[in-house]
Image (cartoon, rainbow, N blue to C red; front, side, top):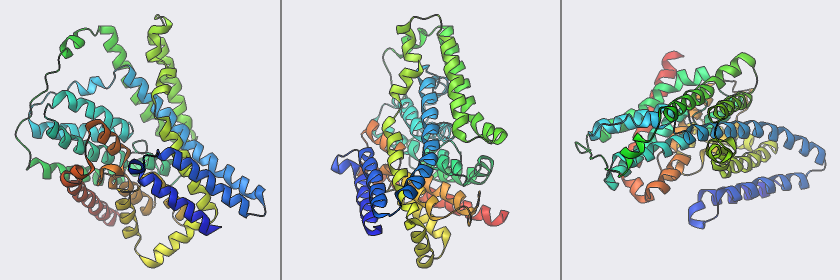
Length: 430
């Protein structure tokens, strides 16, 4: 049974990793892999009721993550529908290339700690299209956006799917992960920025977009106030989730659902006097139609598959083998981070959570902190290594080889700079 399970998972994993060459959506592969793993498990067992109990246990944990992501994505879409992000992006006016590089990178870094890194990357590339005319220069900036979005998501419990998984799973706590990973994550961005500063031109020409000024003058004071209200309420509810969990001890998805309800009510009040057709673009129903449901189903499939491997003790066996073969856990985590440049970091972190249990590695242990950093930032080394990278790749038509030549080395030195920073800080504090 175990051999067949491994074979199914490896084939599924390879199909996910090579999604673009084989032209099969990774969500479909993940769902098939997850169901087949549990099918093999239950057929091989003499007590189906025991397997069903384990499946229900894993599904409860997976559902917490999925409901959290669903609520967070909907809130972000509602903010975007009200053009709340324009309040931030319209204030970027610099024409100096180096200044613009640092501004874009730092805004992306901190914005992705509140939003998810995928949404932040999409928002910031949209901004770049308005600021930079030259396509080649814009690609370089887009590469920095990928690095900054992934680095910003790593130190926040709500900034990256993998960090959210660790938080919901009880491996990390919000205050500790912010305290321990903010500096290493920032260094993983600052080092690439310093490196790129010395190889860039002096200025960049702002793109002349016809009709942009007319569009801005058409906004009434009411519409601008709506944007401001939705941005503040939306970001406020996202930031309140960790506080809500600390106060009530309810799981994070309850906090995000409360936040969604509040944002929903505010949106309804703001557009209460409009007719049904005018209100539709600002409704939750419309926001739900725009969120990336495919990603939600991908997480479901891959996490269910990981659950089957955990229940059959394959992951604990892999952890023991790695400990005997490699020995050093820091090196193991660094390798996992490098692997996330090729393989999606969600199944990597999910597998790691199954390999190392909380009994031996309690909440806020070094391995979980380090895992959050490495898995979050390692995906920047290749453009296919993160959701942010894949999104930017499609938006700006960035070639895999171009990114490998122009950005990968920069991201790699930033990754290892952050690794060193974390290990030094940990050694000093402990």
